[in-house]
Each structure stands twice: as structure tokens, then as C-alpha cells.
Length: 178
Image (cartoon, rainbow, N blue to C red; front, side, top):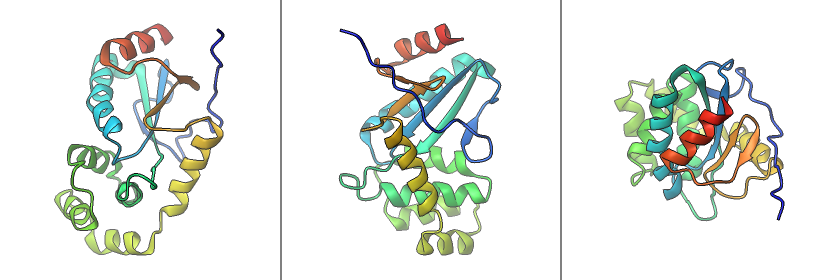
């Protein structure tokens, strides 16, 4: 049985993507994730560990893929992360949301923004106006066009990764991609 190779349709871009690491790193790991997804919550510390192990050899990209049919807070959590991005705090909010995944209602998202020292008036305005909904939809549609049908979905150097994402297996695959 031959495994189908599924490629990323929207290339990584420092102009639009949320990136940790150098875009020139030898290996790029892209995650399409949902902040309310329990599997994404399980993947979060695994990604942190492989980032630690690979250091500057890894470029990590996160794209929003909120599964709103089953996760009622996923869209607003993604909007909160994007609102934080405008204030140059995307990764802090990303981490905070995953570390507090069981409390993602609007009241808690505002509290997280306050804890991160964001301009709350700006944050609340963007949240209530859904300023970032279009950006999240763009991520979501790029995922659909790239074959994403659940979360988390990973791509290594633009090719969908379909194996286990436990630390050892993912690390070994990323290391071999270097």
C-alpha cells in the first residue's frame, strides 16, 4: 500500500505566519491547530520539547484551524492569539492559552490578555469586532486545501506528517529531515 504524499499549499511566509526560529533553518514544522482541541493540548509540550532539542535547526509555524463545530471556544481563542499578535505577543498568548486550555471563555481570554500586559481596550475592541476572523479563515482554508481534516495536523518541510507525534518519533523524523 502506497502512502499518498500530501503537500502544503500555502508556503510559509514571514510576512503572514507566526514563526519561532529562523525561516532558513534546515527543517520547518508547521502545525494546524485548535486551541480547544485536547490532542493539540497534548502536542503542545511535545512541540516545546522538540524545539528545545533541535534549537536553531528548527523553524516552527503555527496556523489556526479552529474546529468550531466541536470546540465552541476555539474561534475566540484563535482571535485572542491574533489580537495579541498585533501587540507583538502572539507566542506568549499562544502558550498561555494552551497552558490554560480548560478556561477559554471570553472572560478568561481577557484576563490572559491583561496578565500579558496587553492594551486591553485595543484587545477588547478587536475581539468584539472580530477583526481577526478573516485571518483565521485564511489559515483554515489553507489547511483545507492542504488536506487538513483534524487537529493537530503537522507538515515537515511542506509534506504532511502522518506518523505518531510522540516526542521520540517526531524528534527522529525532524532530525532525519535535517
